Figure 1: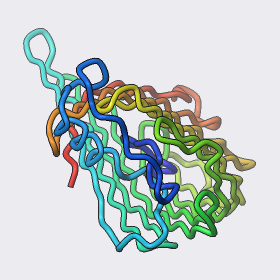
Figure 2: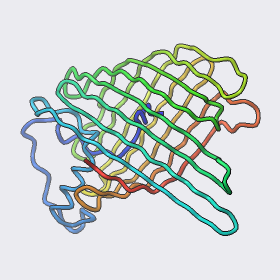
Figure 3: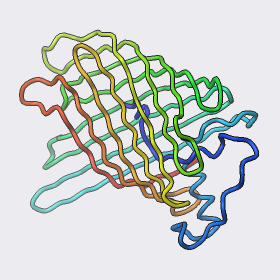
Length: 272
């Protein structure tokens, strides 16, 4: 799921690159920033680049984030939990390309209780500062939701409804095709799908951002919903802490399998 996750999902920033010649941000003060200094402000900008809208005339650029979280306990029970994701973007206006991946695994007393893998590629073509066309090509595997393999491809249009120094709100709508293979004897599913998504970011301080990524991929056999809420705080020029809460829902699951999974994680984020 990276619909968003394709890609779903992962830090953000106010769209400061929308207008040429705009006023520079105000100087950072102790009440505005966790770091309370200019370097703290710059570290936040480095960590929150993937959501900026492309700037006309800007040179081609790469940006990326890698996140990892791990927890382990022993004693009355032995548990291990791992979640990691990677998001890379390449921008050469009017094009922008995203490539992302995600791994979530959990074990309890040597027994696997959660296992999810996802990867996605998303190209975008901007017609103007706020409006763009997109493609989305995704793969995910989630055997605990009865998904052996799921492949999806969609195309559509997106538009930034809100884009200023403090917050952004982008909506997307499209359609495509999805193929699902199940872990049990359920016949493979092939169906047309509709895809909708919105991505919201809010700059709480110069170093702290909130983001909400919500996407729906609906077909006649299954409707898949993903919501990722995250709070990210920059600590240095390249490192941040991220607290996230993820909800995944499949409308179709066999008896005995829950339709909704939730994940809460605290991750270390590295920007590059």
